[in-house]
Amino acid sequence: MFEYSEIFDVIVVGAGHAGCEAALAAAKMGAKTLLITQNLDTIAQMSCNPSIGGIAKGQIVKEIDALGGAMGKITDESAVHYHMLNTGKGEAVWSPRAQCDKKLYQFTYKKYLENAENLHIIQDEAMRVNVENGKICSLDTARDTRYKTKTLVITPGTFMKGKVHIGKVMLSGGRYNDMPSSLLSDSLREIGITIGRMKTGTPMRINGNTIDFSKFTPQPSDFPYTPMSLFNKPVKKDFLQCYIGRTTDETAEILQTHLKESALYSGNIHSIGPRYCPSIEDKAVKFPQNKHHPLFLEPEGLYTSEYYIQGFSTSLPEYVQYKLLKSVPGLENAQIVRPGYAIEYDYADPTCLNAWLEVKTISGLFFAGQINGTTGYEEAGGQGIMAGINAVLKARGQEPFILRRDEAYIGVLIDDLVTKGVNEPYRMFTSRAEYRIMLRQDNADLRLSKYAFKYGLFEKENEKYFNNYQIAVSEMAKKGETSLTQEDLGIWDFEKAKISAKIQKKYQGYLDRNIKDAKALADADKIVIPAGFDASKVKGILIESSQKLAKIKPATLGQASRIPGITPADLQLIALSIAKYRKAKNG
Image (cartoon, rainbow, N blue to C red; front, side, top):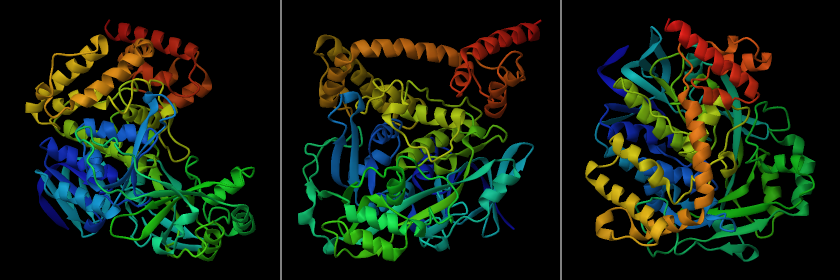
């Protein structure tokens, strides 16, 4: 075996949306970082929808941006269409979304990574995780190479034992025509990680030249639009159009006739798919009363005629996919260029993780993205940047970085994963956040950019501008004006400050109530469950509570309170027992 001479601070496995954000964050913090990917040409590939953002997802992109990540900036560089969702509701839940040129997005991110200092990128396949004395020490690859490291971030997406399904056809792959990662999950199982199976899917892609767009409703891009990055302004450019259509009675009949030919209903797939992004055959079974489902035709890029059909995800045989297309007005003559398919893959039970995404039982090992049971580029990117930051902090022997539920959607996401676990692919929604009035897309920087400066993800010379921006928003929210000018705000935009101030003033009464509730949450999270104290052994708590506490091993009383089924009476007993334990320990 060839042993690489350098010792890395951080190794990141996988260059999808989680791995890219993790590697970039670690490198920007000055850590010696290695990014390992099976294929350099698929870095940051948009495997499914060529879009970034959406309901709650757009907020996560803004949060990644506010923390110094790249997803928002790269989206703006590659966007071909913008649309703000939820505008029929209050500004608190407005969510930006952008269609991207999928290749431009992918190669722009690759360039970001190639230009990053402290980052070494290599094409290889991770095979085995090596642990000594409960601590990560190295990683072995398919080319019989060993890389030594202080920390390891694993972000394999859908590649661990990935299996593609198109009707009865089954192929090994992390994506269609991309080889899976065959041995990594076995290695994780050997070191005590609980591994399960999940499923997701994607629709067929069709040739835009074979679509009759006159039978669809055009959806032009917003203008002016809201950029995905907090630091970009709208620019006038030619955008591509999206289109809206619907399935028909004939579509429903085809689905009923061929249902058992679907991989999902033929018995070939046994794992659970995403409830909130079901396949078209899943919709037919679970919502039989709805015969007509919306379809969105979305362009895949500036220099391709491919269109993505959002809402038409399927694992039916290819000949049935053609029948489905012919049942939709405007798609009667559509040509499939890539069939829709389902994919099964291994994931790790996320309750094995601490709130900073480090495996509880193995020092220095971090998981991020779909390995934790999530779905979506944005959820992956949010976990990735947090794992990257915390891997560096671990390598340096510093305290971990944790986002609370009242600070960020990313905080809600991670807390849900590590506290509640998953039984289906997890997708973020605004309804999951109890403090969503505080967690708006317009104020992500006010909430989080202080951390980007703290951890070296933003240039220190811009901190004065950020401080002035905070002052300007606060003054305008209270008095309607400020003495500060654009020159005082630098890279922070004065017009954006006005918008945030206006929204903050509008919601101030609700915000005051949220802040009070959030303080109670923070206070509960300050009650640390001491090392050596086993909450599951507290006398008087419910048997169900005891079992859940033994599995999750919460770090704080606040985290224990968020475990489903833990009662107020259980929490009171645990709090009293912690106090007695500390008193006895201190003599």
